[in-house]
Length: 65
Image 1 (tube, rainbow, N blue to C red):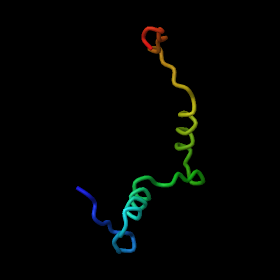
Image 2: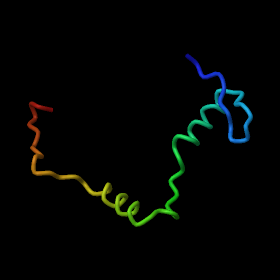
Image 3: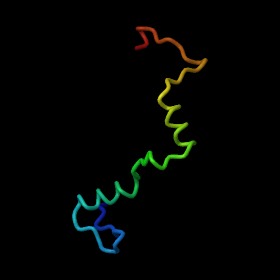
Image 4: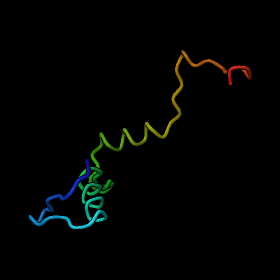
């Protein structure tokens, strides 16, 4: 099935595939606005920059790779 048209915010229809894709991207993947991040967001962003080590981490042997 192919998407034939999408409603735009101005209540008109998309006409081209490019227009459809750009509209979907705009709606499904919001812009990351660091200026309005809360303390919670900033904390999460800092945590994901750190490597994750757990007690279950095991060294891989050459044979396993």
